[in-house]
Image 1 (cartoon, rainbow over the protein chains, first blue to last red):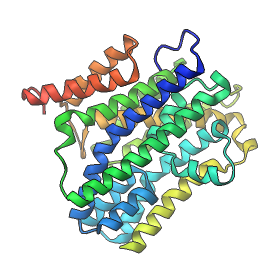
Image 2 (image 1 turned 45 degrees about the vertical axis):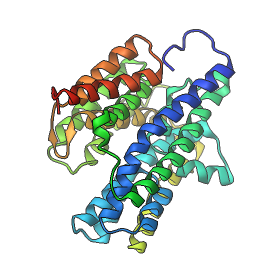
Image 3 (image 1 turned 180 degrees about the horizontal axis):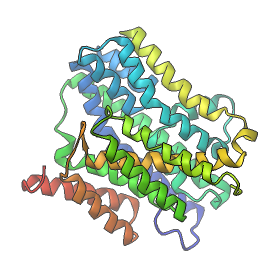
Image 4 (image 1 turned 90 degrees about the vertical axis):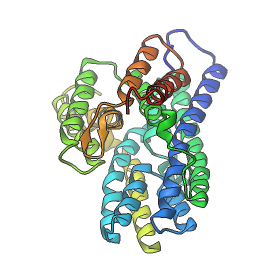
Length: 236
Length: 102
C-alpha cells in the first residue's frame, strides 16, 4: 500500500489488499469481543447483542446505544446517539458511490458494509489503477472481513460475557488507530489535504472536552465543508 | 429493547444507503465533489486523533501516542500495512507492560 511507485501485477496487488483486509479485520474483532461482553453485561440478551452487530454494523453507534442504555438512558436517547454517530457513514457512501458503481442487491450489501475501515481501505488505493478494481477490492475485502470477524467476535464475547483480556494490554487500541492512519496517509496528496487533515485533528482535540464522545469527529467535518466550498470554482 | 435495536439499526442503515443513492449529476457539481472528496480525509484523521488522544471527554498522553509515532516512522520507511499495525500494537503493549505509559 505504501510502495506504489513501481507498477505491480494485479495478482500482487490483490494479495496485498486481501492480507491487509484480514489484518484490520482481526484488530477490529478484538473490540467485537468487548462489544459482545458489554452487551450481555448491560442486560441485553445474546441474540439482541448479536443482532446489533449484524443489523447496525457500525461500531461507534453500537457502543453508543449499549452504553446509553447501560447508563440508564431511554431507548430514544440510545437511538439518537447511535444515529448521530452513524451520520459519517453517509458521507463515506457519497464518496464511495462512483467508485463502487453497485446496483440492486449488491448496492444494499455495499451500504451495510460502508464503515470507517472499508472506506479507508478503498480510498487508500489509487482510483485509476486496474480501472478502479483495487479500490473496489479494498472496499469489499475489508467490509466482508470486518463483517464476518466482528460478528463472530461479538457472539464469542456475548457468550463468555467477559473479555478474553483487555485489548489494550496487547496494544490493539493503538493498532486500530495506526491502521486507519496508514490508510489515510496515501490520501493526503495536496496542500489543501494537509490543511484539512491538520484542521480536522485540531478541531477533534479542541472539542473532545466539551462534546460527547463521538461528536468531535463529526465536528471536524466542518473543515471539509469550508475548504470544499472555497474550491467551488475549481474543477474536481 | 428489540424495538430500540430495530429502529436504531434501521436509521444507521438508511444513513449508509442514502449517501449511495444521491444522483450522479448532483455529485458532479464541483462544490459537492470537492466536499465529498475532503470529508473522508477530515473524518478519518479526526477519528485517528480521538483514538490516540481521547479518554472519554479528557485528553491524555498514554502509550497510544508513542505507538502512533512509531507507526509513522514505519510508514515513512515504506513498511507494509501489516508491519505498521504490528509496530503500533507492539510499542503500546511493551510500554504498558513495563509501566512506562498507561
